[in-house]
Image 1 (cartoon, chains in turn brown, green, blue, purple):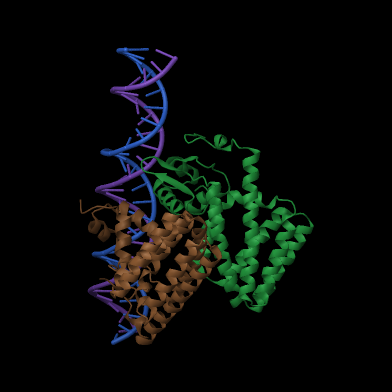
Image 2: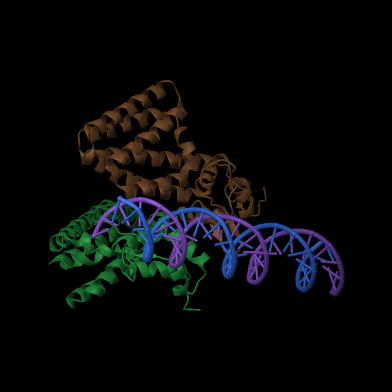
Length: 229
Length: 229
DNA sequence: GTCGCTAGTATTGTCGACAATCTTCGCCAG
DNA sequence: CTGGCGAAGATTGTCGACAATACTAGCGAC
């Protein structure tokens, strides 16, 4: 028994954490010994990760980690934008006083992390705040979609906090969103979330451009299609 | 060889077309002979349909057709609303003159079908128009999501056209959307699509209420959990 | 040296068999 | 008659073996 958890979750985790490079081949037999699971289980895991868009499978040629292009990262962010606005609107309608209290607590913690320049902690609380809003909105369909989107685009999210002055602005935007939820004003909440995610989108575009500027040869440095290890 | 096509597509088709009732058990061996495929292929098909939300699988207890609740149908429609607005906005920005011509042709055909009271043909063209807009927007991520949403909620869509006076209003709304795309006005297009889908949402709510009013015992008439054939 | 062919290797796809689990039915005590 | 108990049947989950396919390396012709 080589540790716990079903192979699907463990493989997903390994991919989103960057343990496997994009375009890296995923050989069923190797994964089988790595996770201590039969090839049948690995195969099932591969079909669900294929559905989730984390890998691509070609018939008779196996699976490899899917490389998300900058173009697709923007598409994903647009979709996330639309869904988060919807959920923010619902949250403003459905939030109870205890929900609002918890949101305010998270914002307070974010303020603290920002004051301490704890960027990683800030990002975690950021994600937590958004998830809390999702939970309030209680739209399971949208939540599931947002979760799969998150795992697809995680590779691009690391760059977005590095923009100068961005964290402070981000905090203000989150404060506005929470205020709109507290006021049970769906239109204001929608607008605040739209403005926030619009800035995230700009920042993502900026990060992509910066990356392209810094190493325009990146296409050549990506692991080649036939990469072995 | 009992006909063609991979078992996953055929099973999905059988489910959305109502060939299998909600909550009906899907026995792997039966499906295997029905589709002339090995149990392995059926098993793979079941995992992807599970991911798509068309069936539910309980460990060691097999798969059954998923029953979409009215609540969930509304959630789905809200999400569709958000995504279609996004795509309409993109379409207004990206549409070429040939795209606009095709959209206008579809609307003309819809007008004709409506004049002939060909409801089925109208609905097909309606779907075609929306798909054409998706294609113009060219956001593959959102398109894939909308496709899976469509197959989930298809059962509820039959009732939405039966509302008195709805088809005429629907046609007007589509004309507005196409006009906004032709004018390359994303804000107007977003607004027009929002208004259209808002009405669809109202109509869906109306259909659900009507159904509940007409047979509030429906929960008892659904195929029981242990239904055999 | 380069191209093409062939044999060998690596990997995926599929099948059948068996184990594990759940469900049903009959039996019996109360 | 009702409810618990146990065996038989039905169904899913997993494994190993083998077939089908793609990739690689080596050889020979030009």
